[in-house]
Image (cartoon, rainbow, N blue to C red; front, top):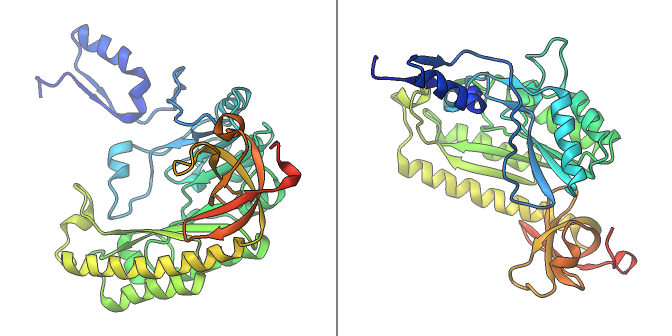
Length: 351
């Protein structure tokens, strides 16, 4: 294709200027080969002054039959431990108190390294920076390791919050999705977490109406949710993605059936989430204040518990005084997706 000047994979994004210079010099450039990540001096824009996202890997090596990510983001590449730790330390020095370690598949972190490093080891290194709170998303049941649970239980600044998608409660659907685990395996992961961290929050993703999914198979998903009583499940009706195998299959579920199943799974999820939230009523929770409460901007603030539950409460001085501070808040009202409380007198100044 002589009219095409440049083809570039996402792993070359921080070298765009060099590639364009090659094009300007008359070369036709194809930059799509896997490479070791070259750290960019620029940093992503931080929307919050308190919490920040930190990438620990890019791309994905999985081949879920419904997902376009491996085709658009390239092969899995882990950032070095040093670069991740340095970024977190720099964020801490700038006043950030929480980071979320981000990867398409955090459990696979370090598989491309020699010598190999595990995600649990990375957690321990990041913990040593002294940042107040560490979270991570997204986990994959195929690679889940008990060492992550152990690290979370041992490290006070690693939050007891896990996001582990199950996608379906039926083994045949999971096989068609190319997920590489069974519903039994997922149940065992949840059991292990609750054995060591009984109060941990566990959230997930689920897809309904995947090609070929029968009513009986959909019922298996609802049964799994009823059994496990997760803190929340992000739900979606299957939508075909270009270049993915599932988009070409003949046994697509009719749109009206997908929407009806989505409605039913959301009803079940809302009921379970509301029931799970009741355990917070009357408890004193450590809340990291992030933003103003839009319904009460004068004194109202909003933050999250260690288990990532959103909490609204009134604080003297409002957001200007409280942003980035920890507060002990007694929970007085419980809703499915948020809590309301009052500032504990023992920590009226924050910390």
